[in-house]
Every structure is written in C-alpha cells, then in structure tokens.
Length: 269
Image 1 (cartoon, rainbow, N blue to C red):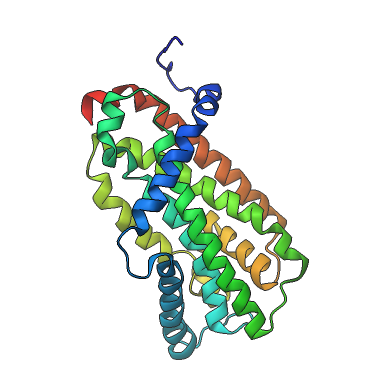
Image 2: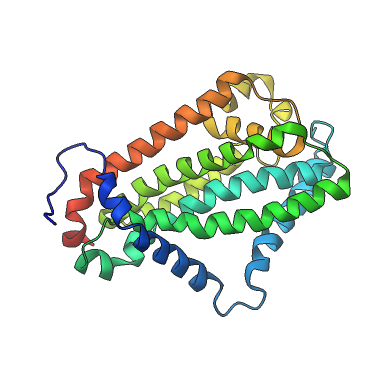
C-alpha cells in the first residue's frame, strides 16, 4: 500500500477507514473495558448519574422555580433531556482527549488516526442504550405513551453522535498542538449545557431572549428528543431539518480540521 499525505482541505479516504474497521472495533472495545474496570458498580454509573442530575434539576427547576414541563412529570421531562445531552456531551468529552491519550500509537504506528476519536462513540452509545432502558421503565411507571414519534429516535441519536464527533474530532486535533483546548472545552460544554433547554423547557425562556435559544441547533435536538421520547409537540419541520444540516456541517468541519493537521501529529504530539 502506498501512503500519501492529504492535500489541503480534503476529506478522509473512506476506503482506508473501511479497511481498518477492525481497528475501530478494537479501540471501541478497549475503551469500554478500561472505563468500567476496577469499578464497584460498573455500568450502573450510567444510570446513577442521570438519575441524580434529573432529581436535582427537578427540585431546583420543577419545585423551587416551578417551571413548565409541557404537562409531563418534571423528573421524566428532565431525564429525557439528560438522555439526549449525555449522548452528545459524552461523545465530545471522550473523543477530544483521545489522540493525546494514545500518543504512543499515534506517533509510532500508521493507521487512520481518526479512528481513535471515532471509537470513543462506542462506549457512549452503550451508556445511552443502558439509560434508554431505564427511560422505558420510567415511561411505563408514569404511564406515558410517546406514540409513533418514538420511531424517529434513531435519527436523533445518529445526529447527536455526528454533532459530538464533529466537535470532538476538531478538539482532539487542536489538542495535539494546543493543550489549552483541554481546559477550555469542559468550560464551554458547561456553558452550552445551561444555554440549551436540557433541564428546562423553551416555554420558560423570557420572550426577549427566546431568539438566542431558537438559533441553537442543540435546542432543536433536545426538542426532537422530547418529542420522540415523551410524545410532546413536534418541533417545526425547519428545526428537524436544521439539526440534520447542522450535524452534517459540524461533522464535515471536524473532518476538514483533522485532515489539515493530521500529518503533523507525530512531530508535535
């Protein structure tokens, strides 16, 4: 096989990525094993964390602030939002430091290095599936039937992963050269979390600030998740299409950033 460097702003050679699919699987499996090794409750953390967060937000926003929740029990409303956010945020958080964490492989072994941040999505998706099982139990307990909208859930899952991977690819690439990204990214994610209607409804946003939330693609994604999981009012069609467009743009941008700097990894990592 002849290895040639990428030229300018170009997308990856997908044939190389496909040929190395076994590497993607091995990296993903290793990430899952390492994450839960030597933990007392193991995968139960996937359930405990969103449950605790949803409980706290229910007390603060549902009981103290008495914010609306579209007629749904506030705990269920918040848990659905956390399910969508944790998928997006988890992909970003785990893919961003992946290249630096595997610097010995990146510097010495040739393979499509983008597989390292991409493999981070495996463990996040497993977490999502486990938490989704609990969501089904909660729907039964609270007597909520989301209806046919539940069939659209795989679409929003895929778009959340694409959004997270796009940001994660760009962040992991820049982190190789600029370690400051590791300090800035968690702070930006925290700001984005509170700027996105995860633990509260768009109905609670003051009218003069509503436009700020309306232009946020993650707001469209959260509304789509709640429509699919809880059967609430469907978001406007332009928002659903906008989420898809934003995911494609963000993922493409992440790939372009990666391709632009990938040849320098071994020298600077």
